Image (cartoon, rainbow, N blue to C red; front, side):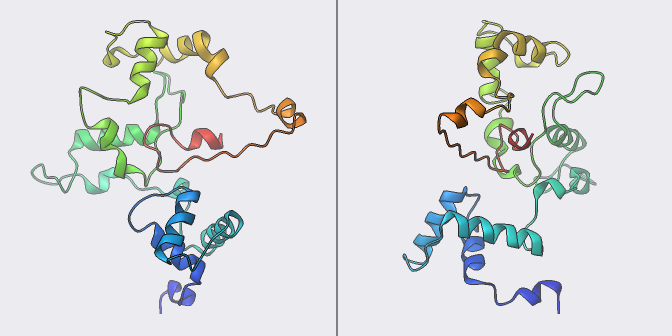
Length: 207
C-alpha cells in the first residue's frame, strides 16, 4: 500500500477539484465553474470550501507548493542527438535562466524567475525569436526609451531596470504595502495570481 492509498476514496470535493484541473490550469473561479459543469450542477463549491480543500490537500501532500519543486532541466538534457523529447545544452541553460530570473552582472536579483510547473505556456512568449518577452518588450521600447526600434537584445540589466524605475516607478510600481487609506474608505481587495503565469512570475505577488 502506498502512502496515497490512505486517502482513497478521495473526498468528493477533492476529487472534483483535481478532475477540474485535468485539462489545464484554472484560477479559483474557473475551478468552481468547471466543477459545477462536470457535475451538471449537483456540486457547487463556494470560495471558502474550495480554498479550505486546497489547503488541506497541500497539508496532506496530495498537491504541492511549486516553490518547493527543485526540478533541474539538466535531467532531460540530450545525451546523443538533438531531439524533441530532450533539451540541448543551450536550452538547458536558457531554462535555468528563466527559473532564476534576471540579475545584474554582480548577481543581484532584479526580479523573480518563472515558476516551475508553469512551463506548458512558455512557448506563447519565448519560442519565437521575433517576438520575445511579451508586453515587456513594448514597455521598454515605447515607455522607457521612446524608441519603437529598440532591440530587446540590447537590454542592460545593470542599467535599464533602474532607469525604468526612475522614469515610471512613481505611477506603475505597486511596491508600497500601506493600504491604510484604502481600508479607511471601506475598500476591499481580492488579489489573484496563478502560479503558472508565463509572463509575470507569481512570486512577485507573494513578495
